[in-house]
Image 1 (cartoon, rainbow, N blue to C red):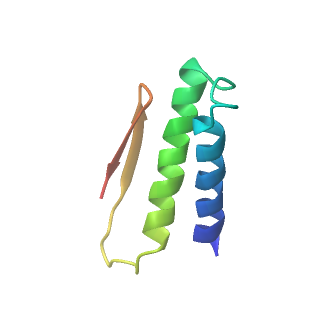
Image 2 (cartoon, rainbow, N blue to C red):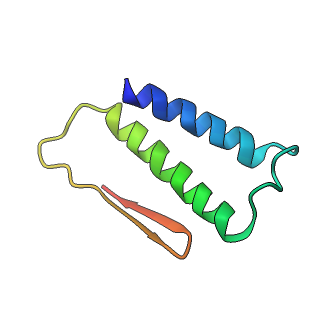
Length: 71
């Protein structure tokens, strides 16, 4: 399932972004963008794990490296 793939992606991103060995590989704006992407992937995974709601609108916005998810 796609949610399983997204779960693995989040776990791998966490491993690279948080590991002392790899932590300095991505810095500055690139790191912020990767953290925002990781948050969006995880939000999508969580949404896919729920039964569909009839009128469930979700809005995801990224501004200045901050991810805002409205459900």
